[in-house]
Length: 146
Picture 1 (spheres, one colour):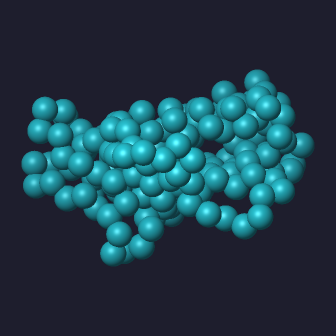
Picture 2 (spheres, rainbow, N blue to C red):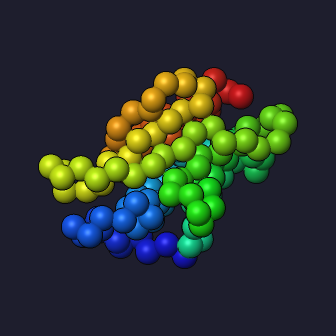
């Protein structure tokens, strides 16, 4: 289980793996905090974690409305893979990924997030910024009533 209390990013001995582990713990903590906000849309949000993944399940009337898994691609890959699951979608596929980059001016690592749908080189965000992007996808999906 991830430690939600990891309040400090990795030290000056920068490790992309530790930076991603820290970002994953931050996102789990934030998803748990934000889950109650979805009740205003008539849905239940359940966030769970393991050592290498965060799973977010959003239910409407006990049925899957959407799901998100944020996980390490593999032990060899220094990136987090985002996989959304929508009702009626065939199978699971990576919708995006994030890699960690050292930012000497910032107090925390930066993440380069690549969204498969939009293509391009990706955007540089913080862990909170990545959470906001992923949360917006969930909210957009729910607002469309899919």
